[in-house]
Image (cartoon, rainbow, N blue to C red; front, top):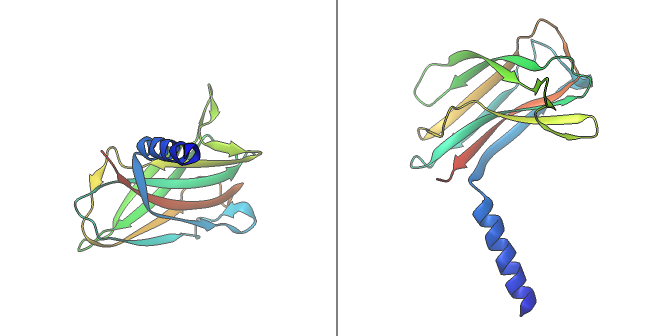
Length: 155
């Protein structure tokens, strides 16, 4: 009986601490850890719940040898019933005070950078995101993979 109470207590703590629910996450890996500007990974997902609010993230994994503190991307978004929208985004990956801002394991760092200012409503239907690195260095060295994460925000 004590074990059951223990499990229920910690399960409820875990669930109470969660403020998002993952809807979609996918990454594309780059051969020999080099991201060519011509390599434009595309991610497709479907939204069915139009009552929820969503956060959208870019996911980047790189080695400690990555020698920039940021990453510039062209992000092309195709929402249901609209023309594709292209925007340039700067992802800040490090700063002088803290170093790498993502989580690290050995010499690999993962960044989930939210690209929506606040949770947003999404239309029902199919979405497509395409990522292209637009840094001066081509190919961009020491980048393992890039992707998209969509989470349902729980308010």
